[in-house]
Length: 266
Image (cartoon, rainbow, N blue to C red; front, side):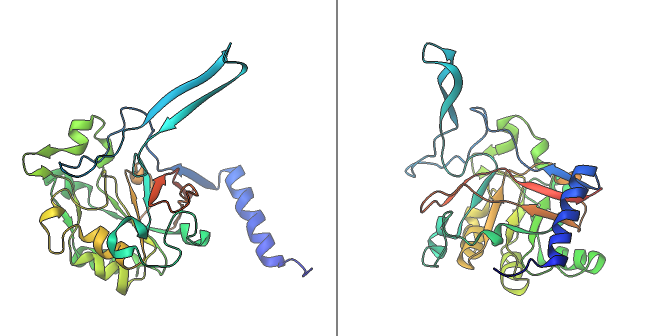
């Protein structure tokens, strides 16, 4: 048995101590999961995803006198959720591309938070461009390798499902990524993935983009990930936080609801 790596052991002990003592805040980036949680709405003839449901099994009664538990049911991409590469046809052939076999170290990375809340408030169809990201880098430094790039739009402040989905006759109107921004992030910045406050990682009108749904098509086609329906991004600094986002270990899962946490210097 090899001797422990003393510097790393001390680093982990310091991290645990800083969390306990308040030097590092743990910020929950997850929305509550309940039957009212908005889900992606696909038009016919596409198959729909089930909304979240909770079925009581027993609650300290004749069905189970000392225990309370429930059955749950939902689609993999419900509430705050993780998109694996296998979720999209462009990512289906990568090895280790599903929720059970992605290397676990890829779920953890530094967070780069790009604040475009004012722009999204003025224009629900606002798109993050490469130029905006490069301007952010001039102020905060280059996006590091294997980072999570999170778009702060304050869209999660929309609590009613109708306002959150913001659907019209031509589809949803929600902010997202410009088609030219996605390959820049995936290929030139080598990020882990992206995170958004909206119901999906693509903008509401992305069905009309070239390519269609560029965040799914290019991000998963580059073996990257997506986080959707995040919240509390207004509590994170532009840089300096660490995001931890492991999905459920579903065999061949295309994604799953998850609890996303950020470690933030106090």
